[in-house]
Length: 130
Image 1 (cartoon, rainbow, N blue to C red):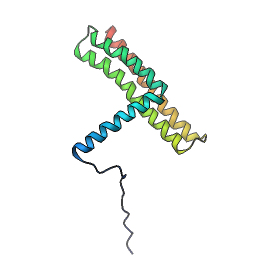
Image 2: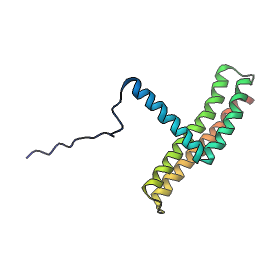
Image 3: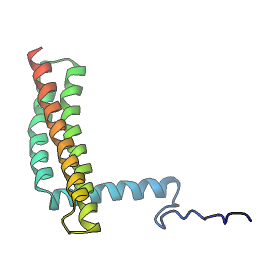
Image 4: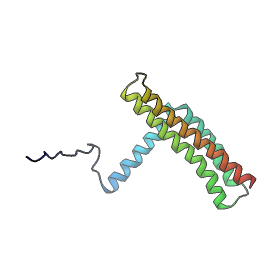
């Protein structure tokens, strides 16, 4: 007897192609940035940090590669914060009950943000101090 074949169903939100997909993806990305800014204190703080550090990096007397490293380390913190916020929202969506695995997921996300911040400090220190 043969095994029944399981159909794989993708999300109903998938399926757009071409420019429609591109515009939808762009809109969803802006929705995500907006939601993070509205609901996540840490992301707002990192936006303030970016508003200070990115212009500062552009005016630093360092090479183009140095400027790229300075700006990239700031953007990396923001990227990791967005991923951490997504993890936290997903865990909370599944259950608000205290659970060891939920705590582990949130703690690991937080640790990733911490390492991104340590990376930022190291990059800025090394680029500026040589």
